[in-house]
Every structure is written in structure tokens, then in C-alpha cells.
Image (cartoon, rainbow, N blue to C red; front, side, top):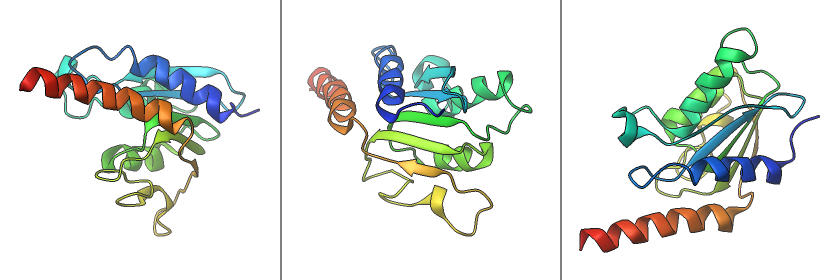
Length: 155
């Protein structure tokens, strides 16, 4: 049975809160088709010095390493605290995740309906089910606190 959307986002929020002070607090988790937690990660671009170390990418890598046929995550759910960017939306499609659940919309960079809609592009060979705006206020508040704190230290 697939994981409940709110439970999935709460698990992603827990990872986001562990991101540390340097990285934007975004968390992602992957659940198996039976609702078992397979992987979870927080943004680590600053910590790893890696522009691709978004929470979604790190969680998808972990899940693929331990489940499925090595890279296909068919039947799995990816939950992330913020609408994925173009890179992460592409990874969702290529990993064959069946369901994407996310919290806050990202109007400036979102690629799951806000700025672009990569995951539902009919030209692609895989289109996951999408549920956005789950626990949106909590997810957005985490980002707002982070950026407010960084603005204060930059002034």
C-alpha cells in the first residue's frame, strides 16, 4: 500500500531540518510500493561541493542502490519538501518513480507545474502521478526561516 502523502512529507521535512546551516533545507525521501522507507536525504550542495547534490538526487541514488533493478524505481513514491527543479524533475522521470509528492510550490524554478511541467510532458516515456501542495505551509515556513536568517547575516 503506498505511503500516505502527509506521512511522506513529514519524513521529508525531518531530513530537511537536518540539512545544516549552509544548505537550503530541502528534504526528500523514497518509499517502496509497500510504503517502506527506502532512502532519505537533505540538500548537500554546499557540504559536498557538488551542484547536483539536491535532496531528490541523493535520495533517488540511495533508493536505486538498494531496491529494484539498480535504477528503476517503479511503484515507488518520492516525497520532497519543495517542488523539484528541472534537473530533479528529469531524474524523477528517468528513475521511473510512480508517484511524486511535494510540499511547497516554487514559482521561480519549479519544474512540476510552476515554471515548467517536465514530469507531465506527453513527449516523455514516463509520467508519474503528481500531488503537490502537501503540508505546503510547513514546508514553505522552513525555507522562509532559512532565507530570513541568511539575509540577516548578509546585511
